[in-house]
Length: 398
View (tube, one colour):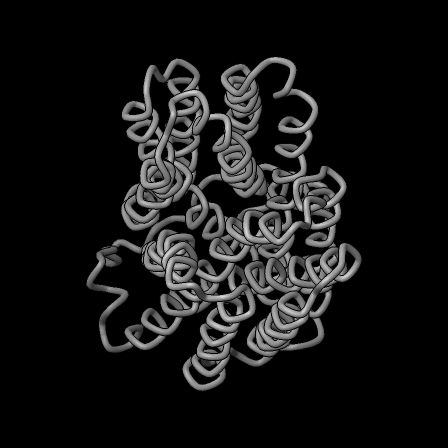
């Protein structure tokens, strides 16, 4: 891969890196907020969901804006909004202000990811496009790892507000990098992006199926990864809150991404996604039967490997289902609906716990969703034949 391709990957990959840092940091500071502001479980639920609600609107709005006004400008403005939100967060006086700021931050985060994926999809084709999209998504693991280091080693020393300030400052570096994004491809004069375009007969089926797939993938990911630690601690497995567990689960994501990127050159994207969804189902079943620290670590690592690999593969599959003039709108629409699942997932687990569902039964519900996703993918998505390795599609001088 040429040097300029690596540069684009790193610049765009920061979208996933900072999204992961943000999601991880919020999960780490929630217990501190509960103590500092004496929050009820309901208030904590609103705090945790405010970002996801903002991301619903961000993905939907910014995807359209990227088709209408260009990817580069929208990608920079979403980062500015995210950075500004985190700066405000450091001076939030109460939980109401915190929730409002998190909603604003979520708009920036939610808008950033579909636009970032569209930038990659616009500048590559074939196998190279798929691999670059998966590799860009792998920056999620790096972001989560950085947040874990800050949470375990820095936050106990300086508190959560200065720690959030550190994340806001690091975003400024990414902002400087994004000034060097390649120019947007010229838009066709007759192309007029609109929300109606992705629901017209030619694209309605893939928009619906991909939106449902994103809904299922996000619901299961956020439902399992945000709630499982709390459930397992109640069962006496305190290792879940250790840095070693967090490190292992995070590092397990990287080979999952890299194997998916490798398989993109051997199999169709649809086939790779089916493999990863089946692997996620098996890992969830294994996790439900885990009864020792070792089996929890092993099954948790496999769950992280397959679940995040499935996410990365879906990232690679989605943009190619839409033509370039409405690609960001299609990607943003699908991920916006997916974010509804991200909002529902954690609440669903809490609701099932109130109904006295066991851990095994709750994980069985997630397996059911994943099996529905497998059927939708198998029957509802058409993937083009494996394309030859592509090259950069824009002017090499950019």
